[in-house]
Length: 106
Image 1 (cartoon, rainbow, N blue to C red):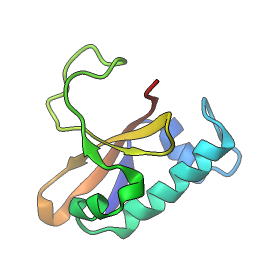
Image 2 (cartoon, rainbow, N blue to C red):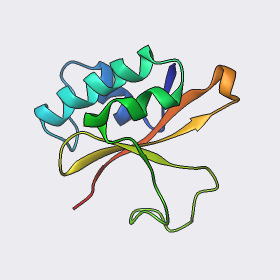
Image 3 (tube, one colour):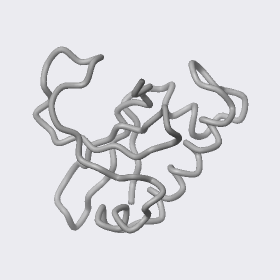
Image 4 (cartoon, rainbow, N blue to C red):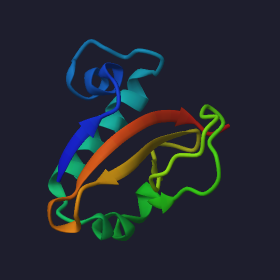
């Protein structure tokens, strides 16, 4: 599946060997592994089978965002504290993932 990024920091975290931004090296490593998984799948339902990722649909508003997003947002777990927040774009046949943020859930 095609993976797109909401901002340059998220893109750099995935592909720049020296960039860690506001995160640590362990979160970077787990994030990069998740991006590889996202690129390998063909349908979002595949993420439900990967129980360690804890793929789930988010409800309500996220702390950092004042307006409720019109799109449906999902998350996968990087560890107990950090999650990747994403949404899906396009029709099911050619769906892509848009990474919105890597957020601290505590």
